[in-house]
Image 1 (cartoon, helix red, strand yellow):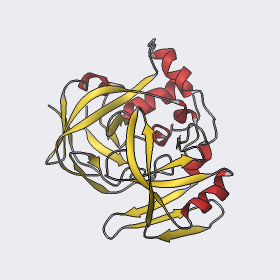
Image 2: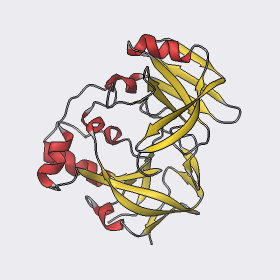
Image 3: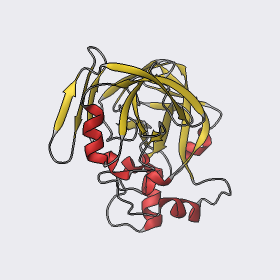
Image 4: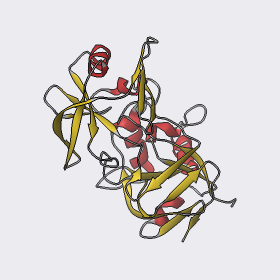
Length: 255
């Protein structure tokens, strides 16, 4: 088996919007600070994600933290860009956690309302690294994606983006990452992650990663060859043991 290396890095500066694929990221104790820096709430103040509105993934995002700059690009070619200005405080329930943040003022929410066809508010959490699902970082191997493709008999390669992993790892056996639970991974020269749980997949994985349209019964397919009474597990969750930077091609070493 070849060396295990990082094949792709994926972040979503706005939770559930289009993924960004940086060449390198820095990870501190909270995770990747640019990842899920913003989230959306609906007219009732509830978290809005691809689970409720798959087409959110069609909105492309550019974001930098210093100096802070955010841009949203919509499928019709329109674009809004600027420095997010913060307004009223708001608290959002995210996977059972209460996350404090502030509504972003200006044209952002109106543009999202026009795209979504419903009231939407863009929110920035008070602190980075708060808007994850169950754990800050997710990992899956390319071999597992390829095995799922073989099980599905889809034409062509299965796109790993439907699983939205922070790190896609090459050089593994199919589902080799299952054996990492409870242990640690060193990625690159300094980052160390503790692998703490399997990733229970949701309906977002059934959506085309470009359109957000439901096109594949991914959950049923996973359970057909990886049966589990609790969830369709696929990939792993990690937390940070030692901060560091990660670049494409970095070595991944189970410890």
